[in-house]
Every structure is written in C-alpha cells, then in structure tokens.
Amino acid sequence: RLIEHELRQAMSRGELKLVYQPQVQIDSGEIIGFEALMRWHNRLRGDVPPSIFIPIAEESGLIIQLGDWALLEACREAASWEEPLTVAVNISGVQLHSQGFAQKIHDVLLKTGLPPHRLELEITETALIKDMNRALGTLRQVKSLGVRVAMDDFGTGYSSLSNIRAFPFDVIKIDRSFIKSVDKNAQAAAIVRAVLGLGRGLGLPVLAEGIETSDELKFLIDEFCTAGQGFHLGEPASIEHFDHIVHANS
Ligand code: G
Ligand code: G
Ligand code: MN
Ligand code: NA
Image (cartoon, rainbow, N blue to C red; front, side, top):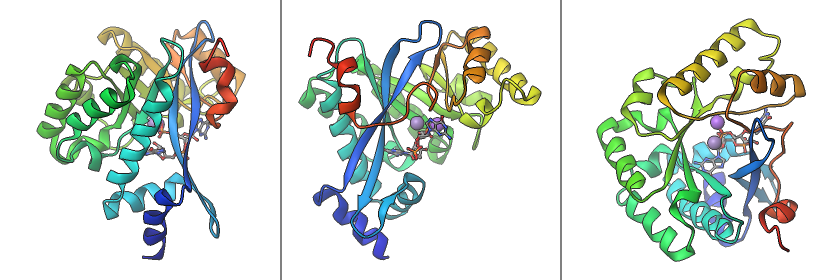
C-alpha cells in the first residue's frame, strides 16, 4: 500500500514528531507529567491522524520501528526535565509481545539516563489479550526495572476486572468516553464513581482522560479523582510550548 510505503519513509524524512499533553494532579492542579503522542505530517497528505496511521503501522509491523523511535525520543526529551516529572509512552500490543521488549526498555533508560520511575508505559487491555501469560511476564520484567505501567482506555475494548487484578498496573486511566458530560450524565457518573471506588479499594491512583470542561473537572474534584488529562487542562503541543514548566530554571 502506498500509505504504508510513505509511513516507512516518514521516519527517515523527519516527518514524525512527538507532541506532549500535560497530566495534572486534580486537587492541586499541578502538572505531574506528560503523555507523548505521535504526529505525522506528510508533505502531500498533510497531517495524518494517529487513528489512521497507528493501525496501519500495527498491521504492517512498522509499529516496532515507530515505537522504538517514539520511546527513545520521549525518554531522551524527559531526561532533561525537572524531577519528578514523568513521561508516558503508548505501547501497542505488537510491541509488548515483540521479542526482547523489556530489554529494549532497559537499553533506552541506560542510553538516555532517564530514571526508570519517571517512565510510564500506557498499555490498553486489548494489547494484553493476545497472549495473557506472555504479557504478564513482560510487564513483570518491565516493572522490575522500576518503570511504571498504566492501564490505558480503561472501560473500553476487552475490559475485564480480572485484568486489573492479574496485571501489575500502577495507575488506571479511565477512557475519555466516560468523562464526556460526566457532570450531566447519570450513567457516566455512576461508572466513573465505580472506577474511582475500585482504584481506592485497590490502592491505585486513577487518571481521568478527556476532561474538556470546568464542570467535568469539578465533578472529578468532588469525587477525589487523583489525576486528569484533557483539552481543558492542556492540549497536546510541542515540548517548546512547555519549556518553562519542564525546565524551571531556564
Ligand atoms: O493523539 P491522538 O488522540 O489523536 O491519538 C489517537 C490514538 O493514537 C490514541 O489512542 C493513542 O494512544 C495512539 N497513539 C498516539 N501516539 C502513539 C504512539 O506513540 N504509539 C502508539 N502505539 N499509539 C499512539
Ligand atoms: O488513547 P489515548 O489515551 O492514548 O488517547 C490520547 C488521545 O486523546 C490523543 O490523541 C489526544 O489528542 C486525545 N485527547 C486528549 N485530550 C482530549 C480531550 O479532552 N478530548 C478529546 N476528544 N480527545 C483528547
Ligand atoms: Mn494513552
Ligand atoms: Na486512552
């Protein structure tokens, strides 16, 4: 496919970049870290959204190279940030199940000097299901390095409460579909309260994704949600945009 060919060239042509979206502590409003998100700008196609090119990269196996690039780039960037700011990197199932994944994480930390506790890997439940035992082994290896692991998009896909118990996650990210209008929608509110209760019971912090309004934020403050992310708190942007935050003394 043409687009696959172009995506293959995108890396060497410097068409890929990472943008960073703030992750904020709900009670203090303080930025605690950033999620790295991949962007592809092609000269002819313009901006190609990740919802288009990530699935193509996954089907073609290119996600391994794209993912390696994003991981190295994000860790290199975050290594220069103020302690204790974290960087969260999305990991697809193909990467997680690839040979030597944990070793690769280890090598990237060594190469960039990023302290392990400041790297968080975002993994969806869907990424776990291909081979649960293998995924569990890999997550344990990664965790033993001191890296944090987040359950991404919780509540969607092949969601199951047993995943929360079986896998060593450090944080639950509630999918943004449940945060949308959570202040007005009784069903969404019930689900979000239940996930917050689950987090409290298990001793896991919960991050709410996709906070777009001050009313949604207020609901989450009132319900003692741990952390949040969304356009209302900060849109994904080039790291230069956050220079004064990540380099406090510059
Ligand atoms: O940035 P945006 O909201 O458009 O991203 C859409 C989807 O693409 C999200 O689900 C996000 O997890 C995924 N995505 C963005 N960057 C990366 C990346 O570096 N690696 C992987 N595997 N997925 C990514
Ligand atoms: O699936 P994942 O958690 O990786 O999602 C990250 C994606 O969510 C990014 O593509 C980002 O652009 C998008 N995103 C971040 N904040 C918001 C928001 O407030 N509203 C919506 N609709 N999307 C958001
Ligand atoms: Mn994510
Ligand atoms: Na998500």
